[in-house]
Amino acid sequence: MWLSDTQKFGVGMTAFGLALIGLGVVLFFDAGLIAIGNILFLAGMSMIIGIQKTVFFFTRRDKLRGSIAFFAGFILVLVKWPIVGILIEAFGFLNLFGDFFPVAINFLRSLPIIGRVFSLPGIRQLVDRFGGYPPQYPV
Image (cartoon, rainbow, N blue to C red; front, side, top):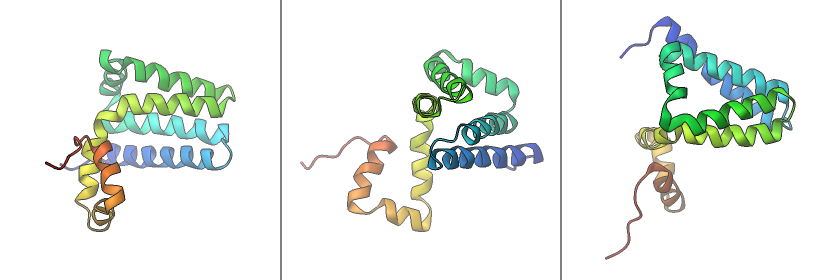
């Protein structure tokens, strides 16, 4: 499946927004960088999947708790409470996108270098836990 130019631009905005959020956390929770990163992330996501589907995603009944937490954290970052805001945002992000983690981990396992790293003994158990695999006990 090929991406349209709008979707490609949305992927770039989403990646740049996540990078700014990470940079804002590294730079001692700089509220300005985190806020700009949040805006770019949301704008990029709406450009990737469309505005209607974005609204539908955030207002689904099973995602409502995550949406409320994500937007409450976003508002706290805007009112200059970045540490509390990013923690609440992270909780909402995990609730919203937690179903996607097994898909992403399985994709990363198929990559040459990262797949080898994920196969290392200590890391494999941790990745399996996040990937949704049940623990395997010796019989």
